[in-house]
Image (cartoon, rainbow, N blue to C red; front, side):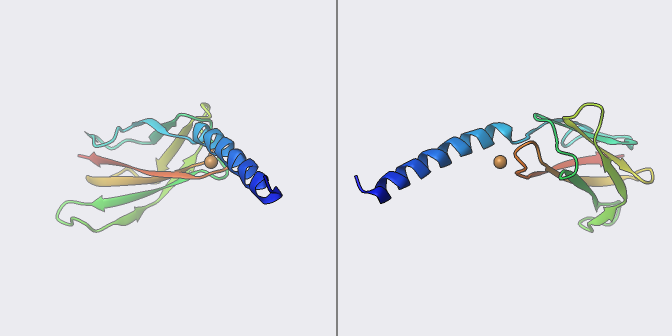
Length: 127
Ligand SMILES: [Cu+2]
């Protein structure tokens, strides 16, 4: 076996090991309050519960109002603070003002120990 081929096999093995380690460390959204697709009274905060401890300085979220009464499909950013929690797997989004009737989307970005960002959405309605 030439040097080049040996190196290629070793590199491929290392990449495979790295990929499997990363797949385990990637945070998945396990549950949330409010839950996906739900309709509720305005929550004072939104909690996202992940499968991994979050690295808070790289994790974050944006809150968007996607529909309001009489104005469907008019996405508008909503002021909110994002923080960690006593539970290191939980991200907390606190709107600056009470949420009014409409549909909301949280665009989250979660980073755990391997520093690889995972993104996703949560959609819920406020009545
Ligand atoms: Cu990763």
